Length: 296
Image (cartoon, rainbow, N blue to C red; front, side, top):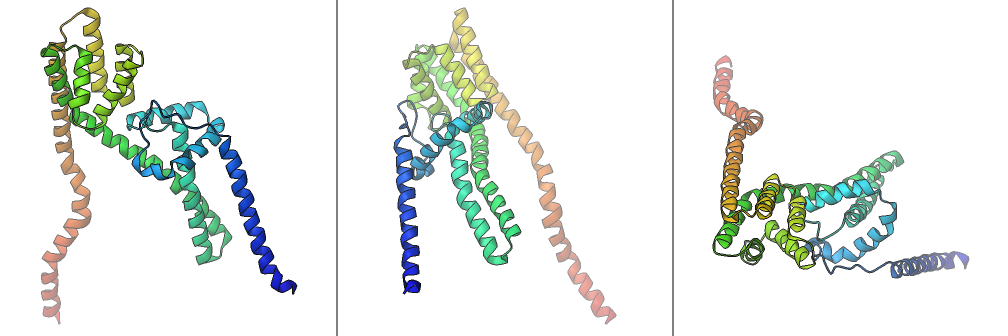
């Protein structure tokens, strides 16, 4: 009789434990502050289905995180175009939420295959580290893509600002037109953020300086410095913008030349390891066969 009731008691205990855990989790979550996204853009599209757990985890771990690494992570996120979509605490929470399932899957899979606790523990740690590194690599790749997008789109943006200024608009009106009519991308998104800062009461010079800081691009920093100096000294902004556009196009051409010069060097490794051996096999295989047939 007891043997028949044991599975039922075990299942009931597991169910009760799950219910209590969910109740405790709900009590903890209900005490967390709700997220205020009034001055932020929507989260990245891939993260929206799991945004609630990310926010809850970020609120729980926020008091435990040191300030200096969070500042560095925030700067990297701003350069990747994520500064107005999520905060550094949420990025750390994303790393933890990805580390947990990958660690469990790696450890359980290794234990099932080898039945060795040391291998399973190593796989558990390695899987957790690999899962935590996924957002870091994504952030790095996104930052590199954003830098390329900025270098390609900045000359067109400066030309658009030049046309607007020479048509009679002031610099704020020119940025407004660039935000409305410019191509979609990181530059237009950051200009939109800059205009929101201006409408919120921040000075135009401070908003442009924050714009340059968020992008972290030297060409944008030079553009902002030239515009601020021209406004402070009362200079005509049109010629300043035209010189900045010429300089930006020259820099882009120099980067293209440098990439062209580096291409042959980057091709050496594939040539040596893949193409040359195949070429040698195609050339010398008939000769080798003729030698073997002659010796035979």
